[in-house]
Image 1 (cartoon, rainbow, N blue to C red):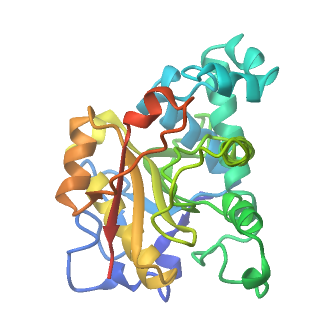
Image 2: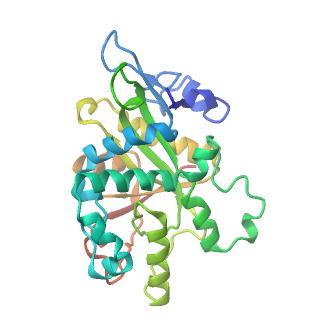
Length: 292
C-alpha cells in the first residue's frame, strides 16, 4: 500500500498515542479504525502519487460532478479568465470532473509528492522572510497535505487503496476566496481583483492553515470519522506547523457539515469573498477557529 501511515510520523503527531481520546476520537493509537468486525482495518495515512486516482473518485462520489467540474458554476468574468480551457472541460462530464480533480490534486501536492512529510510548507525555506506575498502563496499552493483513510484493495481490483475518507490541509491567504482546484486560477483571479481594486480584506497578515475537501464515503458515515479528521488536522496545524488558527469554507445549507464545524468551535469570520463576479460563492460561509 502506498498510503503512508500517519503513525510513522510519531514524533510529529504524538496526539495519536496520547492517552486522551479528545483528538483521535474513533481512531486507535495507530490511527486505525475497523469498520466491520473481522475485516482488515482502515489506516489513516498521507497520500502518495499512486493513491490519488482513488482519492479523486471518492471526491467525485462525495461532492458530485456539478460541484467540481471546472466551469460548472462560473460567472461570466471567471469564464473569460479560463477561456478557452473551460470550453474543453464543459465538453465532457464525468471524465472531465475526474481529470480536473486528479490534476488539481497533483498540482496542489507537487512538493509533498517529492518529499512526503508533515512539515509546514514554509518551514524548510530559509528565504521565506524575503519572499513576496505572491511568491510565498505560490509555494504554499504546491504543498497541500492530503490525509486519507484507506486499506489495500483486494487482489484483482483496479487502483491501490480502498479509500473511505479524505481531507486536505494547506496554507491560504485569509481573504475568504474559495480555492479553485487548480492554484494558478486562484492566483489569476486574485491579480484581477487587486488590479480592479475589489480584492477582499484579510483576517491575518500571513498565510494560515486551511481545511478543505473533507469527504467520507456514504457507507461509513455516522462513525465520527469527519470529526476525527478535523481534530487531527487541527493538531497538525497547531503542534507541528505552529499556527494558532484554522480556516475553512462551509456551505450553510449542508446541515451535516455546518453542524460538525459549529460543534467543534468554528465561528463566522464576518466577511466573504464578495467581488462583483463571485456569484453564489459569496454566500458560502467562511469560518475560523482559534487553536491555542
